[in-house]
Length: 315
Image 1 (cartoon, rainbow, N blue to C red):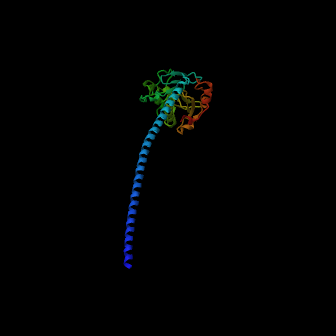
Image 2: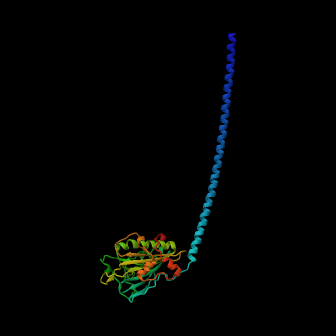
């Protein structure tokens, strides 16, 4: 009986082992099949994603280009509206002022000056700087000369020699690069006055640079500037050229949709602070100088813009 039991166990064990090995192969084969299916599905999704990405990317790009094009067209239209929908002015820069008996109005190509034969400096200098004029390339002259149009004696180099003062331009040479003639005119002694070196080379120069930038942006800037001489007694040189106690400059942008204006008063001393510290209203400069600026504006506009000293509005 014992031998029969042993034989039966071996057969049963062999069959069972065979079944187990077969079962494992089926499971293994089924897992591989599913893995392949998943990999193929992922590959398909990747291809679809790439197609959608580039398709949508082109659509987004086209939408951006279209939006930018519309914005440029609207900007161009607005610029055209600004340029042509506002009044055009002639002689906006000439102030109303009661001149002295020794004052002579001289009209040069680049600027107009009221030259004072008694003080040997200008009462005021006025000009308009346009966007096109800021693109000039004429080289600086550096040759100061008497003004041939003046009926009064002008200052000379001898007056400024070792005086401690610069020959301070009113209409700067940097604004007169658009013509050799106007560059020459800017070095007439009717266009200069004794100016403290750190003022001439500091805040005064910085304002000149800003005006050129603003003229390029706003199509044109109207400028009136000159010395403040009330209370001034100091003189230099053999021609007794009066040294101003301060200088003023008023500017306006008349050809933008909302015109603006601002003034500046600079003490004639070797101090060059931040430009905005010198900003004042045009009304303030009018009270100090006795002049009336930008009178071609309608009263409603003139009254509004000449009250402002908002330097930030110009930046």
